[in-house]
Amino acid sequence: MVPTHVYNPKISEKRQMVAINLLPGPVPISRQVRAALATDAFSHRSDAFDRLYKQCKEALLRLGKSRSVALLMGSGTAANAVVAQELKKLPGKGLILSNGEFGTRLVRQGEKAGLHFDAHTLDWGAAFVFAEVQKMLHGKSWLWLVHCETSTGAMNLDPRLVAYCKSQDIKLCLDSVSAVGNQEVDFSDIYLASSSSGKGLGSFTGIAVVFYNHEPQYSPNVHDYLDLAVYHNAANVPFTFSSNLLNALCTALLTTDYAKKFSRNAECASQVRKFLAANGLHTPLSAPQADYIWTIALPEKINSLKLGSALREDDVHIHYKNQYLLKNNWIQLAFMGACDVKEVSIGLTMLGRALHAVAR
Image (tube, rainbow, N blue to C red; front, side, top):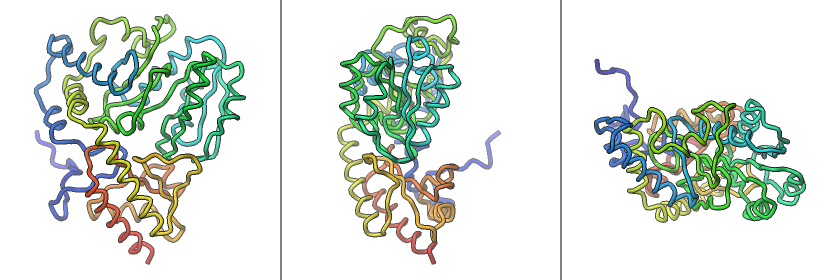
């Protein structure tokens, strides 16, 4: 039976035109990646799968500059669950930093995993002060933070922090779900970093990615599916895996010019800055701003739900329905997938019109 009520975000119900997708997920997917997903499925125990699996991991290692990488079925949250279980194997106490929704989630995952840690929590969008974090790291064995805080667009990774953790043998771990594929990353001095096949990697969600640089040790107290050692020691993929999702991810990795994409993100960011200035708008940040994810605080006279809904009617899709966005009257624009500068420019023009229309 063919579904009769499937929403296709690429096609306008009103005008039969291609929609503009400025969402942080699902991101715009290239035609090549969509075609790769649609190929016939094959067994995760086949030679063809093994070749694809290795090719995908090699591409990820080049992108992340780490020694090893593990893939499992799941979201970025699943990748963070693996990180939490790996931290559980370490002696001593850790520190988790939080200045947004996804930092809050790290704290919650740490608590549920039974980790021994302190939490350093700031207001959303506030910048971490290196000297303060440095003091809090005294006597700590690990540090976990969000690389780019998706809820606000805050860039949290201070290069001084990487150098300090390395000098003190503090295991530095990153939630890099939004960062990987959207900016230059270097995990060579990072203990663990999580990512996923959606967002910056430009594919469909469903594959969790964990970068690492150590030799994971098996733990009898960790479920096999979340034990990094199981993936590290397996000759091939240890559990059931979708060949379609793997093929799509591998295609995205091999067909994306990341240097060009990062340059595009910078150009889009320049457009957004001009747009904000022209419309008297601002972000909720005191921390450095990422090029590829923008949270915009709206004035009271403009309701974020009405604005987002109005744009959707015009086939411009922004992020506005998450509870934390609604609560703060914020909207988000993202340039994470296969979009171009022209689409972003059109999207900003439509946003400007909608702002004035909703304010009336």
